Image: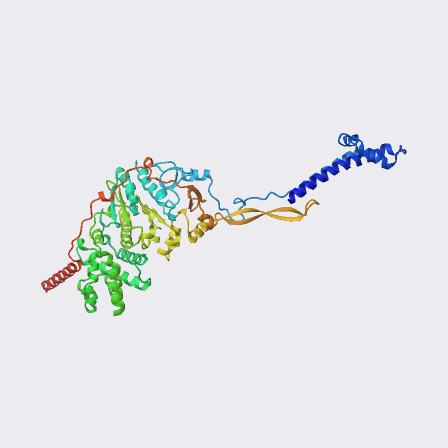
Length: 615
């Protein structure tokens, strides 16, 4: 309403000026040229005649008398002054990003040209996404790839809340892509994949078989199909013994379905006792009986529970090395403390009383020494695990830890560099539990040609599993991918990691204006610091987009590319069924505690006979 009134006043004033100024101009001209010589006209009559004469107005706009020019100037000044006095400044709808000015930060996203130059050179590496929206994945498609032979390591962290397409836009495309990039090379890449729900196996196994892979499966979902692996068989040093023990205990404590004391004293004590008993089994039992099943049998035997027998138990069987020292540490505890340690460890080892777990861990049908080694055919190992709970996380943790340790030993046989590059795709990393010394291994994996992709739902998951070293994990991985964020911690970290940029903002103020209005605006431009993306903007990331952040590069916004296996026309291979795999062989149903006691008695008798013979 105020603007409308101002416009009406403007036009009224303009009309008045256009009526009065021609008259005044005509009078002024006549006074100079005529009126001073014609005294017969009175001033009143002269003015009236001038108003009525049409030539007064025609002459004002057609004659270049000095008075007319002065009138034109007054009208023009009025119009210009009114326009500039009443017009408002154009208010910017958004700040301007000025990272080139750089006074408060230089962060920005890569341009489409930079993305092309950095990620579209070749297809040797992790598949990251595309610069084109709404594409469907196909093997070998043009897209953004993280090169293997680059200044950055291949260690990749993926963060994606449930429903952010972690499996269909990252995991599945890369499983299809890795055999493709090595198809014409002499060396082939091996794959280790953790698979919640067995969906990944079902979707890709046929393709991998067709590409010439030997496919192995550890089934911790049904505990029935596929292969078996005994982690104890591959322990060859005291360090590995402790890593297996500590990883198992810490994973039990992290399990959501089992509640134990989080006191580090009890965890460390139980880990030491487990390490001592594993060492006992390794030194006393023959290769075929070095299993967790026997460890549980010894733990519940009279030789361990009875304090007097326990004092000489390890010495009687001539146990050496760190296993003996760990046992002595256990014996230092008071009776009540020792009893609590025994009960706690027995509870944690109860998983090995489950028939399916005994079958999977009592023998080995997967020669993990072949992973990364020279062989006729590449191999892929699927580790199936439940997605609804972490009951079997400790055993899965032991398996993954064993494989990692074996890879380092295999690399030593080839000059500290695996003959076949090995890609780890650890989906639902939180369900594996804490892998011992993973932050140390990440610092040396690149030189061994071990390429891990660690997939998490959120940063709090990582913090919970790796309380004291989660920042080390972040720093050891050069590539961070954000598919979707729901929590504040991940959003804050992502925002901070993207960096700060410089922005230019418009400042406005009001000062006294023309007689048309009471106020008049003025403008000022200022530079400030801003996060490239604020935490709330990170959480509102478009479902189709992904944030790629790499060391030494500006971050990128890419489009996700999904493998839509539920669409027949987009399917790369047929589905595989777990039930087509052979069932795991059942171990002896003879009570293992009885077997263990019988074996130890036979061993003790054998030692006595040898001693008598020597005498």
